[in-house]
Image (cartoon, rainbow, N blue to C red; front, side):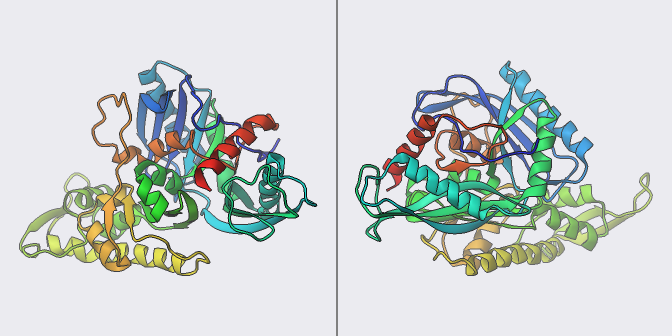
Length: 423
């Protein structure tokens, strides 16, 4: 049977979730699995797994056998550390070119009071109208609710009116890569309980409350995809993806320096920069060339050569992001840029982002969890930590792979909580 979409049956925000639960971030170059337990309002980290991602390109599966081996390995590592076995995971993806769409749904009331069922029906209708051949809807999130064309309402339930209008933000992805990835995870003996774009999760992990309220732009510089997520008024407002990332920088170095990919990655990590500095032309680096693996030819190149190769590619990524935002129907709110993902570790990338976007920028770090198992730098786990936080913070309609419809009372409680806190 094919996957279906129903509303997310996860517990409403604020309700305790004591049993361990897992999240899995699947990227182009790495995978991360975290297992946590919710204690009151805190998350306690029980286990973590990190593995290189094999069989993926641009976050999408190109070799199912290799991808499944990586997924099994990262799940096993986290389960061994946590001392538990996962039955379900929340999946973070960069695949499928996530993008935003918007719809307005009007519901005739005839003068009666608004009910929770009216709100849920509006989300379901918006989702159904947006879904088409080759397209799935990951999230349907209400961003504005009004009665009879009046002011936006905090919570319209119980209020009288003739017509209810709901503006819905729809996060859509290509269906084929999504279904292939979900199927690969479920062949590893765990169910996929929900799917969240990586940039959305990264924003939840590293933005402050003020940034999500006043407005901030998150750039998740991944290996094969750069995710773009714009937050304002305490919620996700817009999402995009650019099919370029750190892996393309490595490829440029390998080609430009005539060296192997592993050597290019090492050079990028140790000496890569997007800023030209005095002295770079004099600092000489020995670069193994392509040839006999037992006796590779060596070449000497100045460090400045690396910057000459790296900077144009990073500029191209930022220019593509700007083009996506220029086509947006939603005006950019806030004056804050937050960079996360492996590509954000490149020297000078924050300064270059400030120069090109003309706004303050900073590196995004995941907010700390209790029981961190000695993990000092959580940069590699930013998206996974955001997935943990999403499990208690999201609202609306969400992609599900399980069959059947959860109890309406749970869904309405979750939606009502979200409305009270955001309107």
